[in-house]
Length: 133
Image (cartoon, rainbow, N blue to C red; front, side):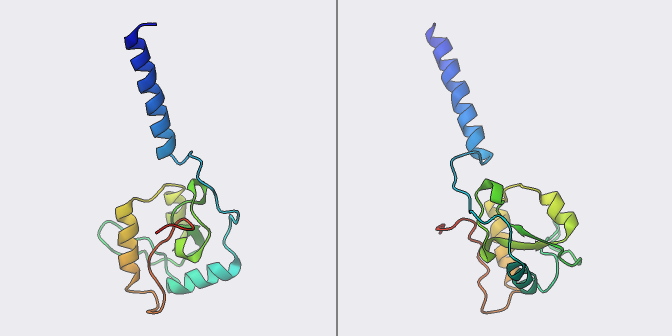
């Protein structure tokens, strides 16, 4: 085997590892609780004032009522099933979101926007993984 072949193989392995990590197929421990309880859903919807939390590119909030309580950071990618990772969405926006991992910027924007409608005594920060931050 030539040295150039070894370099090509090492590069290919590195790319596979990077893609696996980026897509969430790492050894991240998943929360054993997959679904939100009905009490968590009711509390999450109330925090969102019974309105979908999706904002469009112009900063306008969706006017539909929430029908889905979902993980902001997907459970399949290591997101916790806690109220700090709960997002109230209408079915259209939840199905569009699917299991995509939100960017750091999108998470910060949602946290900032929540200050306008969350009760004052409720934290707006999103802790997507137990023990994070």
